[in-house]
Image 1 (cartoon, one colour):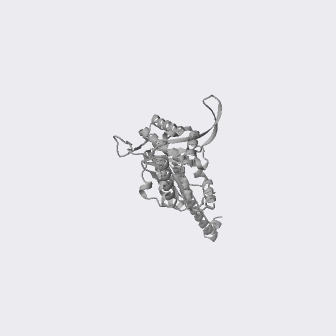
Image 2 (tube, rainbow, N blue to C red):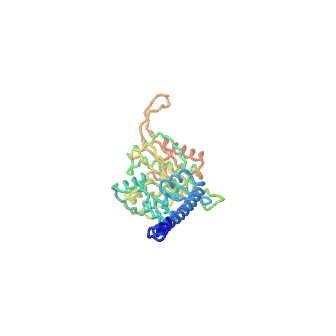
Image 3 (cartoon, rainbow, N blue to C red):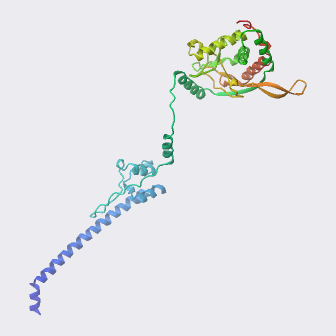
Length: 371
């Protein structure tokens, strides 16, 4: 028995057994050390995630779990460094610009390949914009007149408080007088010439409507014009332009008709001089010849009012004998700067216009017989 033990002690088998025991012991030590490192890593990882997750919203937590992110390494932009949903989305769109790490390799283990974010589907807005880009269209270059119109209209609607008043006016007497006058003279007078004359006289009667707003004068920003200069809207191929009839309240129907015709011809031929379309104290826009019943016009700054004139049409009314009758009426709408022209002044102006148009014989005066 002792001899056998002695033989085993010096035999190669014992040496192999000792080597195997030493090797197994080394493996165990390395494995235990690796387990200790892994436990420490997970404790730190879980601690970081838990501390960060305490301030996370449900949406942020969902994104972190979905994309396998570490909340402890995400730099938040919210209050007190709180991670917001936008911080996660920004990283997913551009991971190179964020300190966020998508994967965490365990110590001693091979690193896992990075998890790339799923491809995002196009949003409805981007799809709509792509569809819009495919729509065929034609560029219309802006000329100088249209550039000025765009600038002035934007200025008017953004800086002037528009207010509106409308009135229906009978024009049977006007049409009858117009027919008589045109049969007696060479100058042909239009319904619009009667409107110009009525407005000019009404502005002279109600000077509060012939005013403008001066933003440079804080003490007295409302100014009354000393003359009645009417801007008449004329539509041309290059855009809308408003030649001016100066001192319109001093001119008769025939003179107004002649002057407006000359200015309109110049406007269509692009031959108006600057002083013939710059300025004016009150504007008139008539779309009756385009079969428009009623509309409201945009104020032409620095003026404070513009009168929109619709077409004349037959309506059923009640006459002085309290009987139904057919009459010709038209509707006018005054657009006014509420800072300058009060409601009562605007109403007085429209009443004066109606008085002159329904009793046109009061308008016959200076310049009627001029050729």
